[in-house]
Length: 250
Image 1 (cartoon, rainbow, N blue to C red):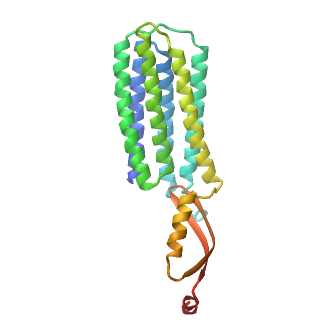
Image 2: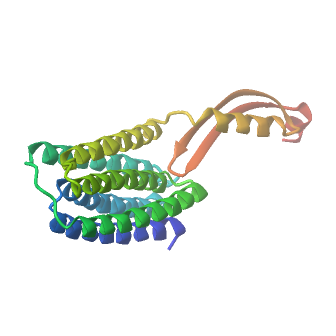
Image 3: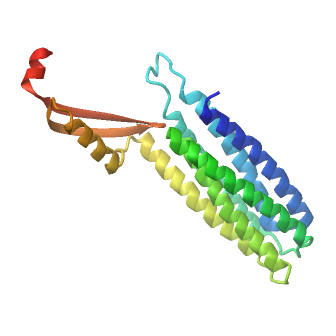
């Protein structure tokens, strides 16, 4: 199993574990925000399964797709973003429509959320590191989402802490969570769609490529230089003018 697939599988197991913790915490405390977070985490587990499936499919080659299905990773990133946005919508409807409930068992809820925040933060750093190491957009998208989860979980914890001293901020916390979710969802959606539509690679990559080509002794001039992303790979095309002695050798 490749490193990317192993990381995606670990994400599924960790997300399901966190989902279980949040369900228990939501039942014990009666928190709307925690219930929303549990639903959010359940959608995360679906997203993680999508990541794993995308990584499995991306490396396959067929007669119809002889260069591989690398853009499956970007397509799955778009699917993840839509799941994220939908979960945000559901959380918003839950927070707006629900009546305020007095929270209970504050200490237990705070401890459980603290455990969730630590686990999520550490794994998001690990997943981001692996994603950058192998240049996998789907792992980077999932890691970015996990980092947003750290922030949203922290907001919910703060709401529970304030609830323990009489300030009812549970519904407000749930709506703040929605803002985090929407921001991440739109960013991942934008990046995925740009690649699927063959948007150019970033200027920095093209600039570095141009320098490498011009440093080649046989190259006289670069007439054109374009590039696009496909999954974790970048494809560069260049039209160059070579020295005459090289042309004779060819």
